[in-house]
Structure formats: structure tokens, C-alpha cells
Image 1 (cartoon, one colour):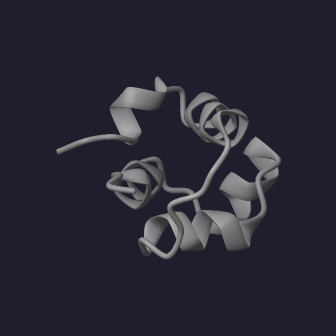
Image 2 (spheres, one colour; image 1 turned 180 degrees about the horizontal axis):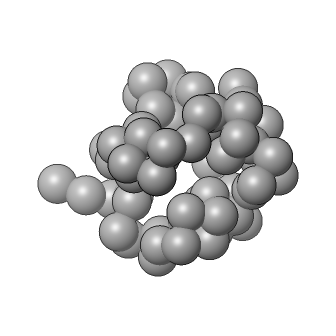
Image 3 (cartoon, one colour; image 1 turned 180 degrees about the vertical axis):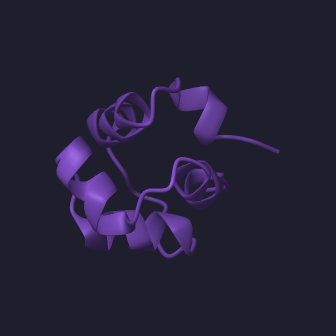
Length: 64
């Protein structure tokens, strides 16, 4: 899934572990998303990550 999760996370000065704690999404899933290693992800997970970063889902995911 095309996304800018890593860029947004790094702009906010967060590590994967910090984002994991803030979003309650596992660090492994965050890593997989950042490295395009997964295409199967729930809407709940996308919402948790976006909310933890103060963004909307389309701002991070589904970008061209």
C-alpha cells in the first residue's frame, strides 16, 4: 500500500516504538507498512495510526 507513514512519523520526531505506543499498533505492523511488506491492513489500524499522528487516513495512506 502506497503511503507516507515513515515521512510523517520522522517529521514528528517519533520512532516506530513511540508511534506504536501512541497508536496501540504493533511496531512490526508499522515497519511492514513503511517498507511496503503488507497490503492487508484493517481500517481500524489505519485510523489509529493517522489519529496518533494528528492526520486523516487519506493524508498518509492511498497517496500517489
